Amino acid sequence: MTDPRTTVVVITHNRRPELLRTLDHLAELPERPPVVVTDNASTDGTAAVARLHPEVRLLRPGRNLGAVGRNLAMRHVHTPYVAFCDDDSWWAAGALTGAAELLDRHPALGAVTARIVVEPDGTEDPIVAELRHSPIPGPSWLPGPALGSFLAAATVLRADAFRAAGGFHPRLWLGGEEELLAADLASAGWWLTYADHLTVHHQSSVARDATLRRAHGIRNTLWFTWLRRPARPALRRTVRLARTVPRDTAFLRAVAEAAAALPWVLRERRVLPREIESRLRLLEEPQRRSTARRYTG
Image 1 (cartoon, helix red, strand yellow):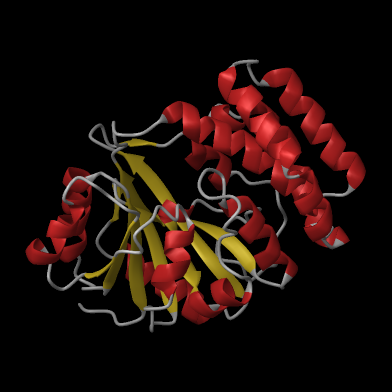
Image 2 (cartoon, rainbow, N blue to C red):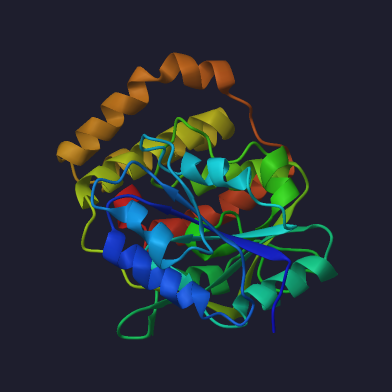
C-alpha cells in the first residue's frame, strides 16, 4: 500500500539514536513515504544515518535552524501534503493515508492533527483531550473538531498552504512556534482539524534542555500574542502569564527576550480578522485550565 501523496519531514539535533529509531519506524510504513531530514548542526555523528537509510534525503545547513529547518526541507517536498514529525516521534501505519484522504476530500482543510500516543506506555498525551474537545465551532463539512493551532510533530499539512503562509517564522526558532503559523493559515481561509482515528507515537527524548524550551515557549507566546491579538486580549493574556508562570530564570529570560524585540513586534504587528480572533477567545478558558501547557503558563 504505497501512497505518493505525502512526504515526511523531520528536524533533528544531536539525537542520533532517537533519529535512527524514528527512521526505522518510518521505513516500515506501508505508505513508503519520501523522508527529508534536516540535521540542525549535530555533532554526534547524525550524518551517518545517510549510510543506514540511503533512501532518506539528509540536509545539513551547517547551523541550528530550529523549526526553520522544516522550511528548508520543504524546498525538497514535491508531494501535495507534508507530514511533520520530530526525531523522537513517528507516524502509525495508515495514518498518512488517512490524513491524505481527508485533505483530498475537503479542499478548504489545511491541516490534520493526529492522536498522540506516548511511548513506551502507550498512553494518550494529555493534550489529546483538549484537541478532542475543542470549543471552536467549525463548518458542517469539517471531519473533526476545529482547532485554533496544531502540533507540528503530529500534523499533516497542505504543502501549498504552508508555503503561502510563509512557513515557520525564523524569529521564533523552536517552542510553541506553531501558534503563529496556525493563525496565519486560518486568516487565509484554511481550517485545521483533529482526527481521532489517526495516530502518531511520541517517545520523548531525554536529550533536551527543558528549561531553554520553556523559556522559548513563554517568549514565543508573548510574541505571538502581541503580533496578532488585539490590544485588550493581548494585555489579558500577558497579565495571566505573568501571574501564573513561576518567576524563575526561564521566565525572566523569556520576558527579557520578548521585550527586547518590541520594535520588531510593533513593526510586524498585524491584528487577526475578527472571526479568527473570536475562535482564539474561545480557547482562553481551556488553556487556563490546561495541564498540558505548563511551559507557557
